[in-house]
Every structure is written in structure tokens, then in C-alpha cells.
Length: 572
Image 1 (cartoon, one colour):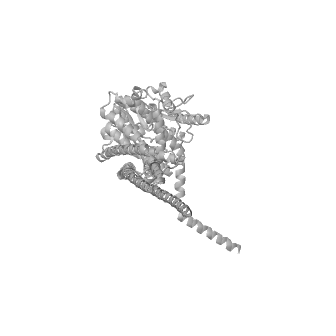
Image 2 (tube, rainbow, N blue to C red; image 1 turned 135 degrees about the vertical axis):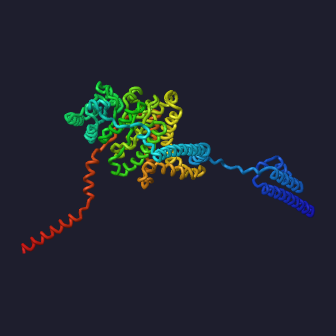
Image 3 (tube, rainbow, N blue to C red; image 1 turned 180 degrees about the horizontal axis):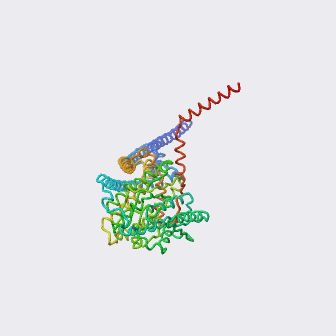
């Protein structure tokens, strides 16, 4: 019995050991299959995996077979399909990451294409500006080379007195208008210059149109008029109760007086202009001998051109305007913009064109356009020069440029269809008015200067994928800048400061142009340019101070030294 019990106990132990070995083999197979799976949790969750695990408890060989089958299926799975990633926790992007992704999307889809379109637009505008500069520069150069002066193109024989009567009946009646507003510093200069004009006293009327709001200044201006009236000059002082229409309203009111009806011609001077005594003698003959001429425009000169860097920059631009733009317009189609002063109008042309209109702050340009559309011709005489004053402060210059940019933009909007439908004007003259006079010179040029140099070039640095052509950056702007020096070659050494100055002012002009075109607030606001009027008073003092009288100072010091020596010896 003991032997039988021992055999039974040994058999039970061997059975238990066999079951353990079978379980171990099955577990190793499953672990191996799990390692090879490498995270394939979805595959091991299938029914086949659980079936193999249960069989491992029963038969080790069967478990090994099932494990091999399991590995074979997994290898097929990894061969024909990408491994499934291990489950991970979803990461929510931060606000900064979301903004960055949104900016990248906007940058690619909106900003870069828009910047590219702006570059192409600037290229087109630069070509337009360059073509306009080349055209005007070529015409001006040809006129100078061929010496096609107005005196050769138009009859301008001097007016002589009637031989039979010996009087002044041969001279036409001329009205000289001087509009002013609180011009305390310059009223004496302008009134005195107008009263000194060489013209028969009985054929000349000087009309001072005073819109001053300061009663003290009004009394000063009126006293000045009375002084010249006592000297035999026909001076009329006119004042209004309000400033309706500003300068245009003032000139319109001056033309309504009864004594003006007999005047054939009207010469207009702003308060800071000083015409030479022979101004009327040289300009009126053009109008007398050429019935189709409505306007004779003369050139501005500046008594304070060298007073500071600001006035030097202005002189460069103004010289180009008169020597090139006005000269070319007069030679091409006998049309240009009236400068508002230092010109002589035919009264008939003013009346036929509808008179002075205050719908814009560019009343001078408005009248010139309406007269030009009725078939009247203009002539620019650059050899006749009138002294004037440039704005000496930045505030005064900004107000002037705002008015000069705002008014033409609004005028173009109002006159565009009138120009297109005009019947008394040739197609070439219409094209010149629309394209050159307005679009190229006053709209495209202003838009290009601001947009290209202030926006496109800086943004092209921030967006490397947008590349501006080198010829657009260097060659065209350089050519435009050099062409601007045609009017004033002596100031070419100031070309770099002038470029920077024009780029800064382009923002002001661009803003004023938009205000005028869209008729925003302050579109018809008129701010009178401040004038100093004391430049000529200071000029002699400056010249004397610059002289260095070495001989006089040497002899004076020698004399004083001798006197001190004599006094010292006498005291000794």
C-alpha cells in the first residue's frame, strides 16, 4: 500500500508539473506574440487571441500552434496595412498656435496675392509717371532748342498812344485785383507794386478785395489805399460782410461792381506778389493782338528761396512746374492750369465760362478748365517774372499742399464728364486734360509716391516671397528724379533731401486727394497760407553783416592802441 500511495502521489505531482509546463509554454507564446505585435491592441482583442489563450491551458502543442498562427496573421497585418498608432490623448492647440495658423492661412491666401497685385499696380503707375515726365521734358527741351518763344508764335507788338489825340485811348481798360485776408505783413508790398504799374492812370483800376476779419488790419489796408488814391491812382477798397466762397467768392464779388463793366482785362495778384512796373506793358499786347487768347500766365520768382532748406525744396518743385509743365502745356495744346495769380485774363472769357465758382478750393483751375472747354487758348510767358514768397514754415506749407491736392481731385470728379462731352475741343486736347493734366500728374503721381515708397517697399522686406524688380526699385525712380531736375539743374546737389522731402509730403497729398475725391469732411476748407513779408527788410542787414571790413577794423584798432599809449605816457 505504501508503494501504491507513493506512485499515486508521484503521478499527481508529475501531472501538476506537466500542467505548469503547458501553461508556461502557452504564456511564453502569448508574450512573444504580444512583443511582436508592438502595440497592436486592436488585433489582440480579437476572438482568435482569446481562443489561443484558452487552449494554452489544455494542450501545449496546440497552444504553440495557435501562437504561430497568431504571429503569422500579425505579420500579414503589418505587411498589407499601416500599423495603427497607439492611443494617445488629444492635444488642444493654444491660442497663440491657433492665431499663428490663422495668420499663415491669411498670409498665403490674401496678403501675398494682394501685395503682388499692388507691386504690379505700382509698376504700371511708375511707367505712366515716367512716360509723362519724358513727354513734358522732351517738349520743353525742343521749345528751348528751337527757341519757339511766345513772342515768335503770337503777335505782341507794344501798344502806342494815339498819334492824333496823343491820349491814352489806344490803351484798354485794365482791372488789377488784389484779394487778401488779414495780410498785415504784405499788404503794403502788394498794393504799392500794383499802383506803380506802368499804364495810363485813366485806364487802370486797382481793386483791393479785403476779406480781413481783424478790424485793425482793415483800417491799415484802407489807409494804404487812401494814400495811393491821393497820389492820383484809381484805387478801390472793397470789403465784404462774410467770407462766402473764400477767394473765389471774393473775386466774384469784385467783378459785380459797376465800374468793372468797362474793363477788358483783369490782372490778379495775391497779397504777397510784387509785379514789376512793366508787367502790363509786356502782357496786355498778347491779349490785344490775339482775340482767341483768354489768359497770359507769367512765371513766379521767390524772394525767400534761399532762406531755409524748406524753401529750397519748394523752389525745385515750383521751377519744374513752370519751366516744364506750364511750358509744355502751352506749346502742345495752348492749355494749362491757371496758377491763381500773376496772370491776366480776358474779361469776356471769364464771363462766357460762368465766372468764378467756389465749388472747390481750386477755383483757378476750375475757371481754366471751363474756359479751355469753350475753345479759349492760353499762353505761358516764362520770360515775365513776378516776385512772390514761399511758405517759410511747415504748417503754412502743409495747408497750402492740402488745398492744392484736395481741390484738383474734387474738380476732376466734377469735370470728368464735361471734358468727355465737350464739343469745342479736339480729341487730343481732351486726352491731354484727362490723362496728363489730371490722371498722370495729380492722381497717379501722388498715389505712386506714397504707395510704392511708403508701403510696398517696406512690406516686400517682410514678405520675401514678393520680389520687386530691381529696375522698378532703382532705374525708374532715378530717371523720374533726374527728370525733375530739368527745371532747376543748379539744385541737383539737393536731390537726395528733395526725394526724402517729397516722400514725406506724399502722405499729406495722398490723404488730401482722397478727401477731395470722396468729398469727406473739410473738402472745401480754405486756410490762407501764412506769409512773413519781412524777407526783403532783412536782406540788406544780412548782406552788411556778412562783409568783413578788415582795413577799417585794423586802422581803428591801431588808432585806439596809439591813443592808449599817449594817455599812459601822459599819466606817467
